[in-house]
Each structure stands twice: as C-alpha cells, then as structure tokens.
Image 1 (cartoon, rainbow, N blue to C red):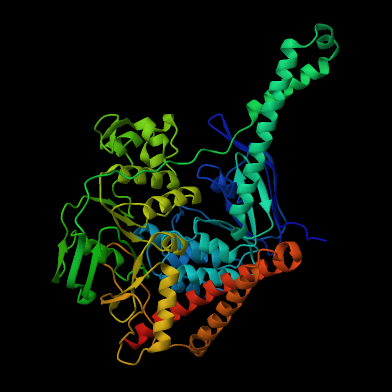
Image 2 (tube, rainbow, N blue to C red; image 1 turned 90 degrees about the horizontal axis):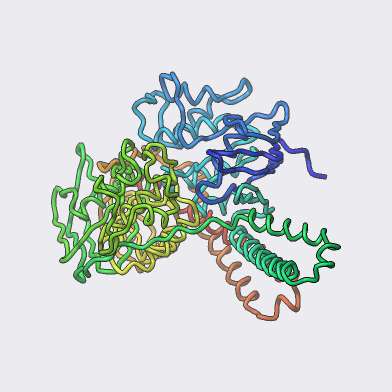
Amino acid sequence: MAPPPLLRLDGVRLTFGGTPLLTGVELNVLPGDRIALVGRNGSGKSTLLKIAARQVEPDGGEVFLKPGTTLRYLPQEPDFGDFRTVGDYVSSGLGPADDPYRVTMCLDALGLTEDMVPANLSGGEARRAALARTLAPEPDIILLDEPTNHLDLPTIEWLEGEIRSMKSAMVVISHDRRFLDTVTKATVWLDRGTARRLDEGFAGFEGWRDKLLEEEERDLQKLDRKIVREEHWLRYGVTARRTRNQRRLEALHTMRQERRDARRAVGQAVMQAGETRESGKLVIEAEGISKAYDGRELVKDFSTRIARGDRVGLVGPNGAGKTTLLKILIGELQPDSGRVRMGTNLDLAFLDQKRAALRDDLSVSDALTDGRGDQVMVNGEARHVAGYLKDFLFAPEQIRTPVGNLSGGERARLLLAKTLATPANLLVLDEPTNDLDMETLDLLQELIANYPGTVLLVSHDRDFLDRTVTSVISPDGTGRWLEYAGGYTDMLAQKREAAAASPAKGGGKASAPSPGKAAPAGGQTSGGGEGGGKSATSKLSFKQKFALETLPKTMAGLEASIAKAEAEMADPNLFSKNPQRFQTLAKTLDEDRQALAKAEDEWLELEMLKAEIEG
C-alpha cells in the first residue's frame, strides 16, 4: 500500500483575465517522488508550483501539506528582501535541525561566497543563491522552477548528483532534457488546464504524450462523425419519431456542447530564419589569437578555421571565457595578438544571453520593430507584427504589452523572433535555450540543423548541443581550447580516447583529441559578461582519484552492455517471441544509457579539474 502523500493538490482551479488556466488539476507528491512537471510555456507550470508553495491562492480546489512536512521552493525571480549578505539569505532557509555547514558547501559548489552582497549579484548569481537556499536545508519536498538556467555544465552535473543523494521528494520544471532524464522517476503533463501523470521518468514522456494526442484526435474525429449522423437524423427523420426521441435530441445538443468545449492541443510555434545572400566559403579564420584581462590570459594562441555551413558549439564552465572568445571571433572584441579574418558577404544576427536587445519599457511590437511602425520585414516580405508574432505563440492582444510584463519564456521567444527576422548568413546564439519550452526548443533545433548558413552557439544544454552542432570548442583547463568533431557526447568520447592513448603528463600539457582539431586558449575569468569561476583545490581527493581511475572501466562495461542489448533487440521477432524479454532489455538499455551519460559527465569534470590543478 502506497504511503499517504506529503503534498496533495485536489481539483485546483485558477482563471487569469477571464481565461481558465487550471481547470481541476490533481497532483500528489509521495515520499521519494522525483516528478518532472512539463507543458507548454503559458500552460501554468510555474503558477502550479506557486500554488503548491502557498504563494498563489487558487480560485478553487484544495492544497494539503502533511503536518510537519518541510517544503522549499525555488522561484525564477528570487526576492532577497533586506538581507545584507548572501550567507544571511541562504541561512534564513535553514530549520532548527538543519546543518549550517551545508550553507557553505552549497554556495561553494555554486561559485558563490557568503560575504557577497545581494544587490551586487548578476541575474545568474541571484538564481544560484536562491538554489543554495532551497537545497541547503534538505527539506522533505523541493519545488524547482528552471533550476539549470544560468548554470554551467560542471554545476549542472553537481546539481544532478546532489539531487540524487538527497532524500527529498521533488517536483521540477526544466527545459533541459538530459537533466530531467537523469533526475526524474515520474512525469506530470500539464496540458490545457488539466494534469496527467506518467509513472516513468522524462525519458518515456514524449512517446506517451504523442500517443495520447493521437488517441484524442481520433476521439474528436469519431465525435464529429457522430454529430453529422445525428444532425442528418434531425433534418430528415420522421416527425413522429423526432417527437418520441427527445432523449436523442438532447444527446445531440450535449455532443455539440462537448465538441465546442474540446480544446485541441495548443498550436506550435513557426520558425524561419531571415534569408540573405550566400557567404563566401570561408567564414572566419583565427590565427594565433590571444586575449588577457587583469594580467590573466583568457585566450592564448588560439587558431581555427570556420567554413560556410559549419555549426560550432562553445562549451565550458562559467568564467572560462566562452563569450570573450565568441566576441573575438565575430569581430566585436579585438585580440591582444594574432589576427581574425572574416569571410566575404557576411551578414550577422546575434542573440545575446543578456537579452540586451529588449528594453522593458517598450511594447512587444516596438521591441520587435525598434519602434518603426507595425510592419516587420521577413525574407524581403513585409508582415504585420501581429501575424509574425503569432508564429511565435503571441496572442494579438499581447503586441501592446510592455516587455517588462512578459514571462521568461515569452521574452526568450520575442528575442528569437527579433533575431530570426534579421537577414543573416551567420547566426550567433549565446545561451538561446534559457526559458524556452521543449516544443520551441525542438523547432529551434530543427532550424539550426537545416540552416543553410553558419552557426556559432554557446550553450550548457547537452542534449541541444548533441542535436545541433557539427563541432565543439572546449577549454581543457590548462590554458588551451580544443575543438572536437561532433556534438557534446562525441566530445566526451574523444577526450576519453585521447586520455587512454596519451595520458596527460605533468607540466600542464593536454593530449590532443582524436579526431577533432586542437587549438590553444582559455582561462578562468571572463571578460564577456560571465560569472566568475571557482578556484581549483590544490590536489584531487582520494575519492576523486579513485573515480578518475575506475570510471573508464565502468564506461567501457556500460558501452559493452548497451551494444549487447542493442544487438539482441535488433531481432525483429524478439517482441512477438518473448515480449517480457524485450521489455526487460528495453528497461536495462535505458538505465545503462543514463548511467553512461552520468559517468561520462563525471569523468569529464574530474579530467578538467585534474588538468587545471596540474596547470
């Protein structure tokens, strides 16, 4: 028998501006639950978490928290109140029985210190401070709204490990597929005002959702056909029969009302990049470029050659200099030495992670057109802003809304709309995935994958990188940057192969990747607007050394297990002959793939730490 829920939402209803947002939502959080809360932007996910945290009062329904249960909520926009320091703010979330040491531990892991002043924090630092306040007490329930936003890859991996080690139940909203695959065991889909639960982690969600939508569409088509038959009877049936069959007539009215009330799935965004002339074959060539700030070299003797059609991803910890290197490559920042040569016929569109192109005091329409009327040029065609913004899921009444009143997801979609309307053959995207829902991410991935020009992309989203880029540039922790062919997962495999073939020696030299391209650069402090990184410890701990030695064997074993399972499942008759064996293999394969991804991420973080220490 299942234990009673720690948190129960029963029949929760909420209406905004006359439009029902939640129409009877049920949500139970049991001890140990790890729930992914998913749904389109605007479906009410963040609002539902606020209701669960008692920060928003619903119009109806019940919110029950088991007496004695501790709950912590991570909002998208933290409120620091009158706290003098970050340490005071984080400590205020502790209960009498909580360990004060966890304040220091969480802040250190998130790259913050207790003496930092809240008023001086950047947006990303403020989010990390709020995350520390949520995790430090180890509450019975944690509610996390986009916890990976503004986190770099090592910190996301730390967060995954921290969540897995905690006993807390969890409900999390995130656009990061890899993160949800790793930490969740159940999925709640918030769709058109109601919630449906799948007792599987996020990895099984998309197939389940598509099946439900197909069934729903079939049911609506059946209802349409039934209504047509009944309407035919109403028009042409015998009058006496019509009089005797009032119930049938009432049933027809009921079906019509049911059909009117049926809300189909929300439409998808439509994305198309502004087209322009074709660039030259060579887009960017960098030769021996270097850049230093405050006496520290961020980019040192870095060389690369980017051709038309390349899609290049830049990854690394916050503070490694990704934005600095990106701005040097596109000519916004001059190197201290070396040279950058730009190709011919280049037209650039730049999406800035700081969203600097959006002013809060402008309306959505004026932000899109820079105040130049109500028309926007897209691929040489004049379009009304209302029609163009509809492609990005904005309602017509929103075009006069101030940008400052938009949600994070709406601001992200507006900036994408503005960037993609710019005619360009070089698309530069600095953290484009923040605050986008998964359906919009899918469309952006498809656009990038099919983009005829060249793309430079900075992202911490591992799944997004795997689906979009043709090569990855990453710091190795010794003052160099290396370029690897393929996506993020390919980079991990190449680093593993390089380490096995030519282990790093003393003196800070990193082994070259195979089959990627190698190029030096990189430091630990960014001049391009990124948060400061953590300083390295003086040496690896015994536990870290042991993990570094054993993880390659673990990964090799998992790869062998995956290959064996895939080979057996390749038998087309396996499911019909032995469905139980097929299901067992499918479950094992999914678990092994998740374990391999986790092991690869842990190994990479340790390798980077080791290289930084040795350098």
